[in-house]
Length: 137
Image 1 (cartoon, rainbow, N blue to C red):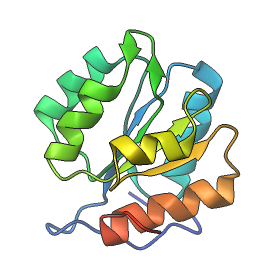
Image 2: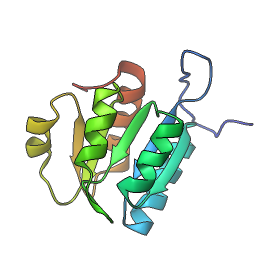
Image 3: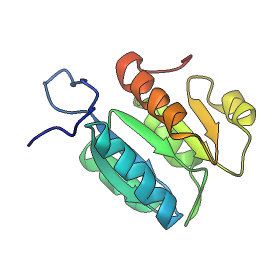
């Protein structure tokens, strides 16, 4: 498969393109996030509007990074975020409901941005998460 122009050059330990899980219940935002991730050359898992389907996905394959909205179609994303954090998956919270500093108290290793997040900032956060396992980018 040909990589998109401008794709970031990252690979997992086994040489595959990193996978980014996208959990977002607002359709247009979910599509935009997914396209941004694809344009960077990463694989997208999702997007999922709810944590139930995201849990099914991570049972089959743990992602290399996750972009999570806090409020999903089936409630708050925290149980999913807890499972991902416990597995060592870098988290990026993308929410219009909870301030980033409040998320930092609960998930000090995660990155957070408020909606609407400028695309260049989100791109930087994804790169940092994939490259460094990401926390203080």
